[in-house]
Image (cartoon, rainbow, N blue to C red; front, side):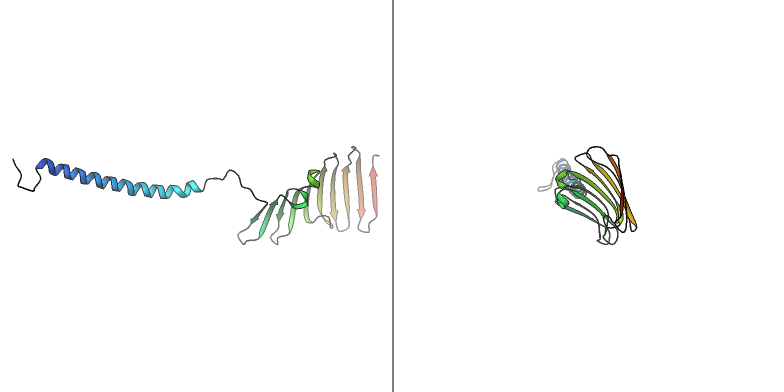
Amino acid sequence: MEAAEGRPTRGEGVEVTNRTRLVWEAALLLVIGGAVWSKAAPIASQEATQVVRTRRLEVVDARGKVRGVLTAEEAGGPLLSLYDDKEKPLATLAIVDGGKTIGLTLGRRPGAGDGIVLAVAEDGSKAMLLESKKGSAAVGIDGAGAPTVELTDNGGSSRTISSK
């Protein structure tokens, strides 16, 4: 059966319909693929960075107050400090003297009457200092391995016990 001039035959109409369907399917796949890619792209950009290099890192709370600092250049070596909500240091871990001493300080004012100081030096000496407003107690082992204990009152009088 012949088709009227200009009109497709039955087989040709099916071919046109199939082509149209394929075009629409390809367009739909492109739209779906684009939507999936746009959702996947932010996930890929949130992957962990392998290395972060900086000289100073500050950790802040929701109000923007500094709660922690990690730096490589304080006191002659790396230093990690943790702060209270008034941004005053409560704990500090430091490597000082060009790596010759490791120190840990805890308290509101270590070295000024309210804190604990722990130190380990390259020569093998170790010390622990406990401070209060009324005095301090220091326990240590010197570089030769001899233990010492020193008690100091707030007036500056001290008593030392040493195994030397």
